[in-house]
Image (cartoon, rainbow, N blue to C red; front, top):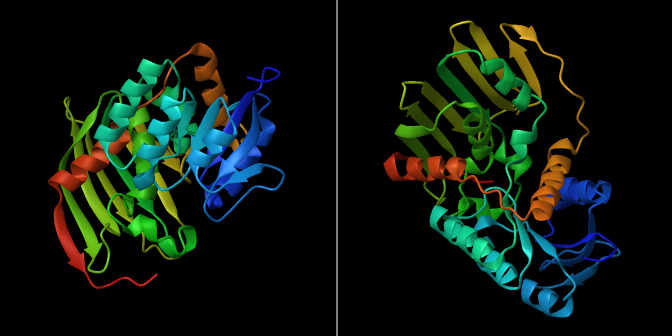
Length: 313
């Protein structure tokens, strides 16, 4: 490290990097962005390379790397970075398969570096407040709805429709990341229906039923054809009343009463991600929770496939 700063690189300079990663890195005094690798984009004032291999060869002073390319291509880049002794941050979802990420965990441990699988929605202002509200209640059932317009949020991004791109679970896994943070025990998939446009290799909608060992039931719906306002809601029914998270973790009601939340900046979730990344690096730890990805994988394994008319985006 240079001047007690973590020399950081980003691989894959796209919309999420410009909207969230760059502002969050700029505000974090632990990091300095010194390089990027991207086929078609760069960051003004930062050394730019066309691929990760040439970047790593040219910038030996790197300490850490944030991988923000599509998940289908993340394993090879993460493996290369870990083998070079770099700490690695994985955008969500952490990979295209559970097995490849588990291998990366083993490699990070072998190399004595930190691996961080991020779930930005867990850092929403409502999440920890909801966890506290649920701590003295018995959850009986949960409903989750995660619906948005793919044309608005992923215009022209073909990778999301390809195998490994997750389709509607690219946003839907955000809801699952909150759910798995708040449930008192692990859930597993009992039934699923996945709706695939006949011209796409990934689903545009899904219905998934889950349960826990002690009988908490979860009914969840995901849809990329939403018109109008987004629906990013999770409602917990308890013996004392309902705990409801809305706006993707940005708002909370307990027993019908709105709860005042700590103010988050526009980039609050990603600011928290980089704070956590710096923390685990300093502690010599990794942070990789694969439960949300496992639930998506199980939905693909167990789900009935429903074929729809072609979808043109």
